[in-house]
Length: 206
Image (cartoon, rainbow, N blue to C red; front, side, top):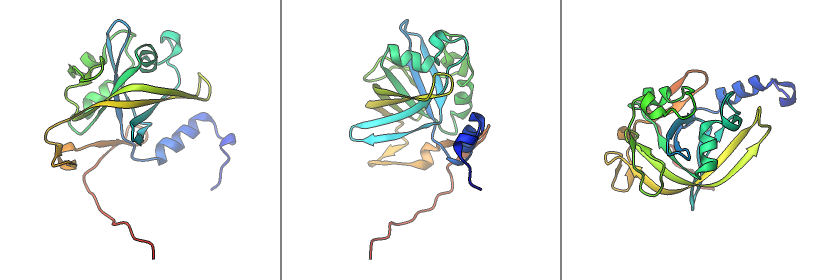
């Protein structure tokens, strides 16, 4: 079937995107506010933006009711303290990541709620998740706002300044997926394992 997006309600647009662009990597983003209180939240509208300079991007959706300035804590914190850590999740940290998605009162840390440990970063103030197998320490590059404050999103670009890789994952200059065991986001409450792989060599032009 063919559809015009102008004819679709916002919820249907979201369901189509989140149900077809799969599987999505998960940015488990840690930030701090002006008082130094850490915040932690997962975002699956996330990917690599550039390798030189190393840049990541993720999307923060519409505002939460009752939040300061009508913004999610992650966005408000990054606007105040322009840095963040993109922690990556795997099978072992999936349950904690899901817990950190709970909307808590402003100022209450999701680290304690999810049962994970804030660990010092190498290059920025915001802590990483000690249990996460991979973490990218980022400074804010830019924020691009798309749509309205009520229904749109803020796309946050961060330049990677420091990297944490668990010793089992990075060996001989290669990432070992069998040690990483990443997961991906699907639609609804669904997630995917990354266990069965196949390879295809690029075919040269005739």
